[in-house]
Image (cartoon, rainbow, N blue to C red; front, top):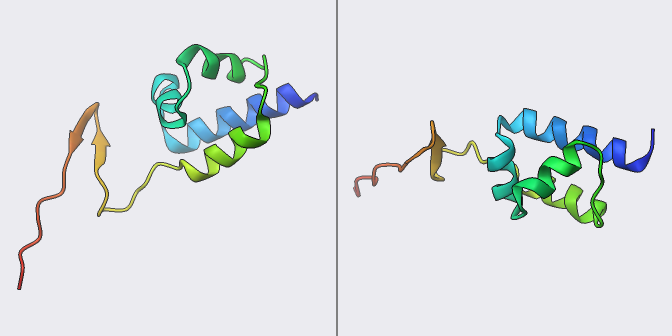
Length: 83
């Protein structure tokens, strides 16, 4: 297995784990959708180490304090009451 194929598998696994569409994954990483799709198809990426770091740091937050995205619409947490 060459480096491009390994990267493609990692990208597919990351997207699946996060439950993202290709478009959403590209947006999270800050790259064009076509570039993301090319990586998934094994065409490679000029900076694979940076991509791996970005995928690790751009994990979708499941923390209830952060804004959540559900069904394409953003849901915001209600403000907490002060005591």
